[in-house]
Length: 144
Image (cartoon, rainbow, N blue to C red):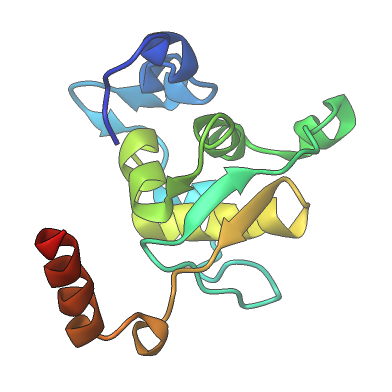
């Protein structure tokens, strides 16, 4: 992800300004333990969905209304805000929200179950094009 381009700062808020940032002290670190953020859960929802680090998460067209928003914690809202403008990988969300990946996976499971986010699965390695074919395409392009 690049920080270049017009409007970058307007589109991506400073993580310390996101909802829930009051629980972070720059010198001390997080003031709330990860198990408290997830309610002691370690798995993302009853569906048992697994989020790869490179899975792309985007906000659904449906924006949570005030009644749904009250059911979401500050960390849920921070993750939703981070992926609202463009898809983010699970690893990027974890880094940008300054939360452990395990916590992000559990919170994303909640958001997915509620229909607030969509997850694009990465392409399995077996379905990727063969390296030999890619080299032939590159060589063909160079020959032009």
